[in-house]
Image (tube, rainbow, N blue to C red):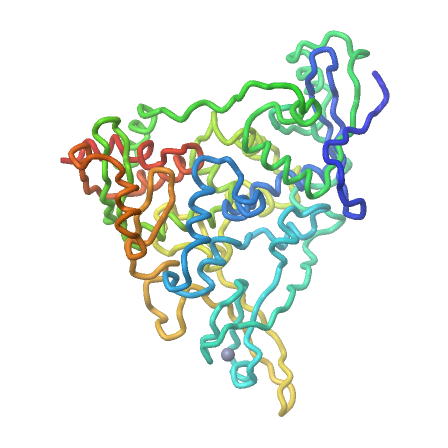
Length: 481
Ligand SMILES: [Zn+2]
């Protein structure tokens, strides 16, 4: 075997930051990576990708994730004026969603979301607000103080929690090494697995293999995240960037599969109440656009708060989202004694939403962490006082505690097939004309109900398709008379 060689795949990187390394076994003759050996530090960072909310992934990848049409949803939300939101904090909750595992992730050697989303909380510094026996705080910027109605703009950092020893975050250290395949199946190191991997990949002579070291800083990690979502053979692409590897992402068209899935689901869940009006192009069987109310918009907007691991647990993505399904399945198959706790494992395969992050009427029902309560001592003019603090729902406007607890207020939206949302009231005649874009006798209007199965279809199509409404709803719409 040759000597270890460093793979430089990001010129101009900052030298001061913490870096991780990964040893890869390269078959130079076939120009591919056979396997990689990773430390638990690297594995912890890799696994933490599953705790990232979808909105965070889009933000980290600068709306350039290439995943279906979700970049467009993010962009629409970014462009939505303050007047459409229930509170100013609502858009922050979708564009910079909190991560329920952030208290774990801040112990990672490299936290891909650490700079973007520091673990802060906000409170109101007005003395008359602090002096109440109950004291409010929020993890979301721009949340309104329920006592005075002003933005809670005093910022503090959470103390690091001492649940993690020796940098053991999700998996234990124990000097265990892990083997990663080119498609990111992850298994603990064993001679028998080495043998299987080498045999399966047709390696005959180990002396022709070279070991290289790939170094990861934050920038390279982001690049890895993007590559993992895009396709397979990720390590080969990193080591041989000039090599043209055929795209492994199939075109999204599996109407049959959706139909089967829908039948099962409809029987299982309550009939829906949400309505959508679709405009179909009957000449090419596409959905041109659709009109919907805030209840459905809130359902769909809240997709951005979903952690990647929850989404992979909800939907079988087998041929989509690159290597992420392999990574998810590997974690599921790893024995519990590899992990620091059962909680650590479930944070990866069924991550919760942070308190108040979700939409209360979200049909896909991702579990939400209960609100945090903190005891704290305040210093008043009169002396010391003890109060308990409780987290408040950033979606609630102060005056309207029991209002609809969605992100956007009463408002109709128009959504295009590629998941661009525009408030109905802001559309001009020209925009409507452009959107419908063809002769009115080629269009058909269909009203349909949206239930859990359709919401799941929309979530899936949003992540894999550029024609979300057509793929998720067209065949259902045609059945509606
Ligand atoms: Zn206040």
